[in-house]
Image (cartoon, rainbow, N blue to C red; front, side, top):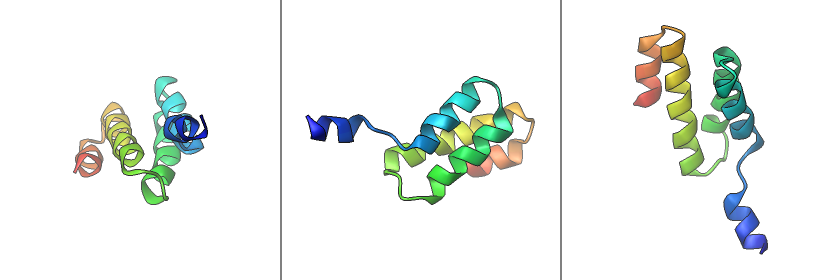
Length: 71
């Protein structure tokens, strides 16, 4: 049971970043998700964070930043 919890648990910054992105608070989402990409999060969480960061930059009209995040 504890292994299942560990597998399903995500970093708080990713959860907060998801929520900010969903609430259209893109600058806030970028700040929170950047903590995931530079921290010790699992690679799957980092990949999701980079994707959300890129989408947030696109929503803000910053396509060069979005491209960098996608890469």
